[in-house]
Amino acid sequence: MSKPVRAAVMGTGSWGTAFGMVLADAGCDVTLWARRPELAEAVNSTRTNPDYLPGVELPGNLRATADAAEALRDADFTVLAIPSQTLRANLAEWTPLLAPDTVLVSLMKGVELGSTMRMSEVIEDVAKVGADRVAVVTGPNLAREIAARMPALAVVACTDEQVAQRLQAACHTPYFRPYTNTDVVGCELAGAVKNVIGLAVGIADGMGLGDNAKGSLITRGLAETTRLGLAMGADPLTFSGLAGLGDLVATCSSPLSRNHTFGTNLGKGMTLEETIAVTRQTAEGVKSCESVLDLARRHGVDMPITETVVSIVHEGKSPVAALKELMARSAKPERR
Ligand SMILES: NC(=O)C1=CN([C@@H]2O[C@H](COP(=O)(O)OP(=O)(O)OC[C@H]3O[C@@H](n4cnc5c(N)ncnc54)[C@H](O)[C@@H]3O)[C@@H](O)[C@H]2O)C=CC1
Ligand SMILES: O=C(CO)COP(=O)(O)O
Picture 1 (cartoon, protein in one colour):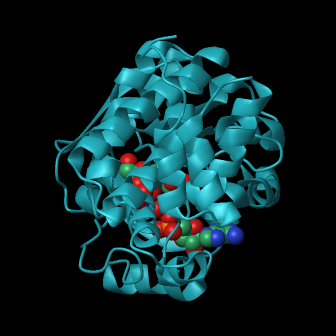
Picture 2 (cartoon, rainbow, N blue to C red):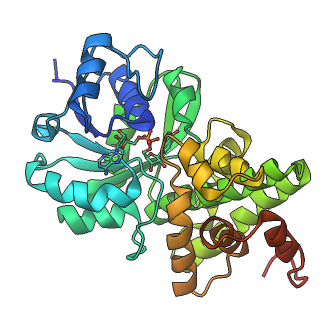
Picture 3 (cartoon, helix red, strand yellow):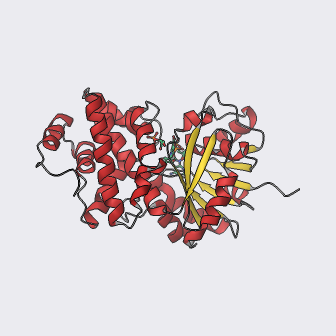
């Protein structure tokens, strides 16, 4: 009998834990790394993650540790599930501990501030590995639903299709059905920008603007994401797939989305400080809206919804004034 695939999941938050559960259900031997030893202890002793997924029973072939070296040892897949802006510093510490041929898998949906690098680029840069050793998991994957083993489809992307297929096999369960894709640029961009559009839709929902506004924001949000993707060499079809439209629809419809909820609170009139205070988990779009706008400017791409989100979240513009400006933009053809 061949030995089980070993996976290290670095990050015991909501998605790290839920995806660890998927890997374990698919037959992998999984070790979660938790920043706090008391959380690792709680996972091992209660077989739940009381802080991030209370009430969800975790499988027996998943355990947790606060010792990164122990988690990373002999891992076939090293899954990175921490906030995007913390990846560079954490991975620099972990790089000397990585198993020699491990495939690094990003679950993160963000763009690094300053460098405007996608997460796979940060991984290649810090761990000094080629693109064929880096994969991305993305799509409509709200962690709470997956932890309840509700059905979901996903995309595993890698420039090397065989590596994508290995990861696909390692995380395929009766409730989690991953497809492969070799368009890493498109898949990552789609995931990061959908968080920004999720904020915009949340703001509109909080303001009570209705479902026509929601449909319009999702569609034009996808249009500006695709424009940026095209400028960066992505396959435009990726954006109408699970990583693009699929994730946008799930995020923009669900109260489980942290980005959507963050936007809703702003749209209802909470201040940024109040909204941050009530947000207990990572809402990546709050930081990544700035790096996405930066990317758009570097590529000469117009992204009016992203620009509006930045003006509300970081420049104190009122949602009412921002809406007026968006609606007053010059009339233009739908396709340019
Ligand atoms: N939760 C979800 O439904 C999904 C989340 N994602 C993405 O997965 C990534 C991780 O998100 P979640 O697990 O949901 O976030 P979370 O907020 O639930 O958990 C974040 C984890 O990172 C740890 N962490 C925070 N700051 C850290 C630091 N400076 N150094 C090391 N560890 C740190 C926390 O202790 C926690 O374990 C994000 O990029 C998110 O966009 C993607 C798909 C679904
Ligand atoms: O990416 C997600 C679903 O696919 C999770 O969205 P939030 O980070 O907004 O909760």
